[in-house]
Length: 154
Image 1 (cartoon, rainbow, N blue to C red):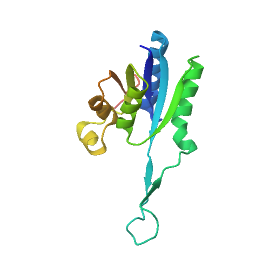
Image 2: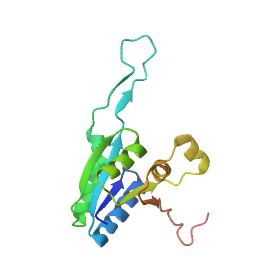
Image 3: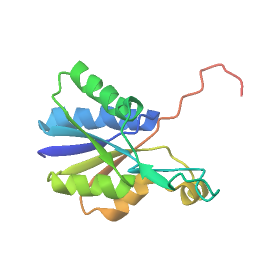
C-alpha cells in the first residue's frame, strides 16, 4: 500500500480509526492522508420568516473545523509519522470517497459509532455510505466499549 486515507471527525471512534490507520501506515510504510469533512454551506434557521437573510451561506472554515485534523496530525507526530491533512467540504461520504479516488488511495479507514440499525437509518451512517459508494477497500473501526471493572455491581 502506498496511500491510506484516514477520515476523522474528532469523535472517540474516529480517534481509534486514526490510531489504527497510523499503525497500518507505519507497518506498510504508506503515506497517511488525514481528512475531515465540513459543511460547504450553512443553512440559516431564519430563512422563510420574511427576513432579508439568505437561506444559506457558504461555510467559512473555523479553528473548530480544523481541530480534528490538528489532533490527528499531533498524534501522527507523536509516533514519528509524517502525515498530510486535508479539510474537505461537502457531504462526508461522497467527499471522502472522491478524495480517496483523486489521490490514488489504496485503503480508506473510517470510524463507526456503532449505532443500531434504526439510529443509522434516521441519522445516517458515514461509514456505511463510504462502504456503499467506493470500490476501494474500507476498514471500519468500531468504537471500543469500556469494560466493566472487576467486582463492580451492575
